[in-house]
Length: 631
Image 1 (cartoon, one colour):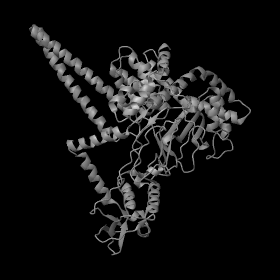
Image 2: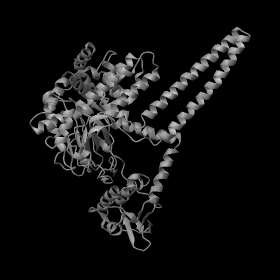
Image 3: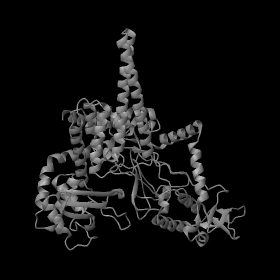
Image 4: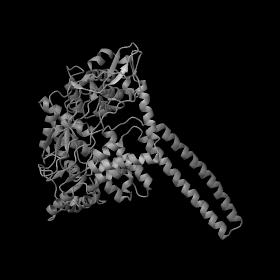
C-alpha cells in the first residue's frame, strides 16, 4: 500500500518548471528526437490527466498515406471467358466516375478493343493476390468481391465482365508471387535501404509532442485498400476496403500547434482542437461505417494512466463482489422476470467470464455474448457426466471463435433457465427482458465504474494470482517457473475462451524440437559412458589428472541433463499452448503488477514474461510494483 501511495503521489506531482519545458520543446519541435526524448523520461512524474481534459498541447504530422497504385507491367495479362487480353499500343481513354483516367488498353481475341481502368485493375490485384487463400474459395467472399468490383468498373468493363467464374487472375497472381520471392531474396544492402526508409518514416510520422513530451504514435500508417476478410464466416467478407483520402480524415491537434500539411493537391475533411479525446486523426471506414482512429502507442503516458485506472477498478471489485453475488442470488427468486433474467446473466458473467454481448446490425457476423444468447445456444441436462444441473453452451463468441462448454450450475439457475426457454423457439432470445446497456447500468449502481468487462478483468486477474500462488514453489529452476507461469496464464485463456488455430508451422517446429531432444539423449548416453570410464580409470590409478577428468565428465553429464530438461519443458509448453492464445489475456485482462511482483519475488527476469513492446506498455507497473503486491 505504501508503494502504491508513493507512486500515486509521484504520478500527480506537477513540476514547477513544466511550462518552461513545454515552451522549450515547442521551439525544437518533435523532430528534435534527442532533446524531446530526454524530456519524455520525466512524463511519469507529472500530473494525471483529468476525466475531461486529456492534454494541454498536441502536435503531430498527421497520418502517412500508402503509395498510389502502380499499374501492372505490359506483359502481365488478364483473361476473361477464354479470351486472352493484353496491352496494345493503340488505345482510347475512357472516363471513370466523370473524370478522365489513363487506362490500360487491352485487346480481346475477338478483335474488339477493351480498356481496363487503373481502378478496376487495382481491385483485380487484391483478389489475385489471395488466390491461394481459402477465402477465395468461399461463395460469400466471391459474391461480395464481384459485386463491389463491378461497381467500380466503367460501363464498357461491366458489359464485358459479367461472371467471376470466367475471370482468370492466374498471371497476375504469378506476378505477385514472383515479386514476393524477389523481396525475400533481397541483398543485405537492398534490405538496409528499406530499413532506412522505414526509420525515416517512423521519425517523421511516428511521434507526436504531447504536453511537451515526445510520445510514440501507435498506428501512423493508414491501412491500404484491399478486400475485407473478417473472422469466421463473416457476411461481409470479400467487400472492398476503399482507399482513404485526406478529404476523409479529421485532424485533432492543439490550437497553437503547427497544423499537419495534407498531401499535395488535397485538403483535410476537418481540423479540430478537442483536448477531451486522445486520438490524433479519425475517419469512417466503409465496410461497417464506423470511425477508426490514429491513437497514441500503448507505451504513452495517457495509455499507461488508462491501464492503471482499469486495473484499479477491477481491484476495487474485490471489496464489493461478495455483496454483488448475494444480490444476484436474491434476484433468482424475484417475482419479476426481468430481474430474474438479470440475476442469471450476471451469474454467467461472473462464473464463466462471458462477454456481455453488444447489439449488432443484421449484416454483422452472428456472434453473441451473454445478453444476446438465443435458446438454440444452450442445452439443459438434469444429469450429465455424473454431474447435476448441467448447461451445455455452444455459440460463436467474439471474432467468430466457438465457445463450447458444459457447466454445472446452481439448482435455482437451472430452474430459471427452464422457465426462460419455455414456449420459445430456438431463434428467440434467452434473455428477452434485458439488454447490455441495462445490465451495465445495474452493475454501475452496485459499484461506480463496474461493467461486464470489469468483471471479466477481475476474474482473469484473480485466476492468474491464485494459479501463480498455487503452481510456484521454492527450488524450481527458472524454466520450471516459466512453465508454471504459462500454465497459470493458460487457465485464464481457457476461462476467457482465448483460442487460436494451431500454427501452420507447429508440426514442423515440434518435429525439430523432438529431434533436438533425441540428439541430447544420445549425447547424455555417450557422456555417461565416458564418465563410467573416467571413474574406472581414477579408481585403478588415482591421480590429480584423473580426478580433474572425472570432475569434468560429471559436470558434462549434469550440464547435458539440465539442457535436456529445458528442451523437454519447451516441448510440454508448446504442446499445451497449441490452440490457446496466451497473448490476449496477458495484454488486456491481466493486471501486469501481478506478473511483475511474481518475477521480482521468484527472481525470474521480466524479459522472460514480457517482450520489449510489452515492457514499454507496462512501464508504469514495472516502476511501481514490489514483490509483495497481491491483486
